[in-house]
Image 1 (cartoon, helix red, strand yellow):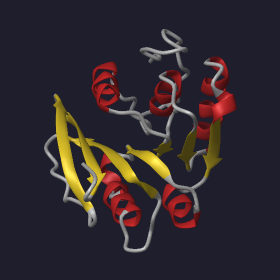
Image 2 (tube, rainbow, N blue to C red; image 1 turned 135 degrees about the horizontal axis):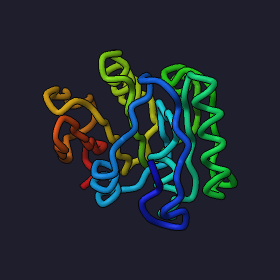
Image 3 (cartoon, helix red, strand yellow; image 1 turned 90 degrees about the vertical axis):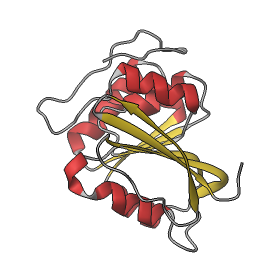
Length: 178
């Protein structure tokens, strides 16, 4: 697993042991980043998506993961790529982070464990009435199995779904923002 472009291009990232964290393939990463950049990485795992974003020039990124070993690994990978000065790592529950944050984000990346049901919960929380975590031009990027179709969250419109074999990445944009 490596950073594919930008200031940290080619740097290898450390990985977690076991099968609980599923790294995003380079092909999927390249596809996502050719479409956008973001600054909130929920269910961060190794931090590779947020690090890629920072490497490509994002001003800042927040990484959230409930696993202590994952949060520590994100910090190590940020140090390895010299991007820690523009990043914040939160070791905690992603849904609780969403409920408590007063920050707004241009882009939010969601890649929870596929069978957990957390993707739908996070989408619901991100788009709940009166909950303004997304900026007016905000985009949500959701990685999910290609055979699973996601419902369009309230207040959003489907921008596009990209398929990469068994993986799909769906982009939602706040409604009314072309």
